[in-house]
Each structure stands twice: as structure tokens, then as C-alpha cells.
Image 1 (cartoon, rainbow, N blue to C red):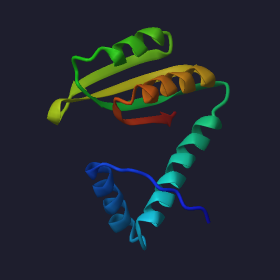
Image 2 (cartoon, helix red, strand yellow):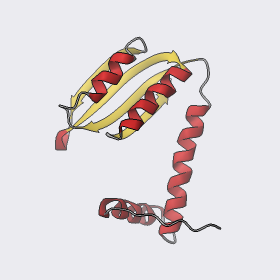
Image 3 (cartoon, rainbow, N blue to C red):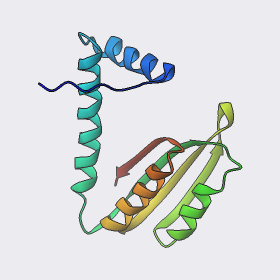
Length: 127
């Protein structure tokens, strides 16, 4: 087994400890492996999408004044059939979009959202 050294801020360490405690894992290394496996499951689910897909895209993000999400939505407006925006606590926003498009367009859109690094949560639920 390889050893990887990483730097984490206090919030990341707290999250890692929370994952360890919640899942009853033996240590932080096990929590990292569990987190990697969860991320890989999401990636495999997206990679398995083919053809026309329909579903709901859910995003939680901060800073309502930052236009990055609106710009992505404008580039993909042909895919967005219905959209809801709601203000949450702590200056966060919830975006819920009903999506219908080709799988590669959806995955591209989701990559754009993730690449911004400003979304706290991004999940596509296939219909």
C-alpha cells in the first residue's frame, strides 16, 4: 500500500474526523479511502450515462452576487427545462434544474460547475 502525504485545513480535518466517526472507521486513512470510493462511485455513475438523459440537477452554492452560475446556466439554457433558485441560510443558494439533454452535454456542464470550485454540493438525479 502506498503512502501519500497531504495538507488539509482545519475544516477538512474536522470533516475527515466526522466521516471517520460517522462510519465507525478505524482511522483517518480509512476515512480518506472511503471518501475516495464515494467520489469514484459518483464518477462511474456519470460515466455510465449515455444518449439523452433527463433528471434533476441539484446545486448548493454560496455568494449569490457572484454571477458564475448564471453564466453556466446561460451556456446550457437549451438543456434546462425548469429552474428554481432559492436563498438558504448562511448566504447560500439552492439551484434545482430539470435537465433534458445528451449525456456528454450534461457531464460537460457538471465539469464546468465543479471546475469553478464554488459549489458546496452538486448532484444529478436521473429520472
